[in-house]
Length: 198
Ligand code: ATP
Image (cartoon, rainbow, N blue to C red; front, side, top):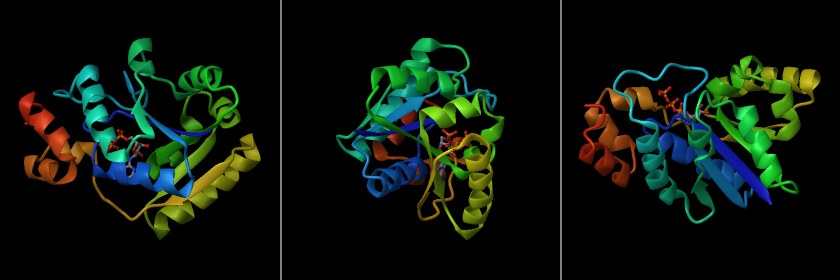
């Protein structure tokens, strides 16, 4: 099986995440996609007024419904607690799926800082890296980094083009109208019902 792994804070999950996941599922013919909400993101501080881990998990489940039956949310990082290091999650998934290919999805921003993650060499041994490229400018920077990662850690890098959907969770948390426009309907209903962000 070809299994995609898409980690993120998902505070909240938005249409950019969904478009990226759809593009990767199609382009790489993934048999399964696992969305994994982080418990504590190691690379950024959660803002005040952030949704709780359980709320982020629940919103991820609602958003994942947009991706069809092959996609599901995994709560391994929430169960583990502490900072959510990707290499630990990949080790666990490798044990769970010993015969399968693991494809780790990430946006350009995350890929360009990949060498500063914990245990990048280990990650490169455990999974293919999949970068979602939004435009030509992204592609040039990605190509440079990919060739460095291949030389240094024998990384296997796949680039998936996805039409630019310039949106971030940060922007959505700050603007109710933008939120309504850029998250799936059920996620917006959840945000409203739980009085999140605004
Ligand atoms: P924040 O604004 O809070 O930093 P975010 O919008 O970047 O959040 P995350 O949950 O941190 O969302 O991102 C999870 C993954 O999705 C990362 O790999 C990130 O690069 C990627 N990503 C985020 N926004 C987009 C987008 N608009 N299109 C494609 N990928 C995205």
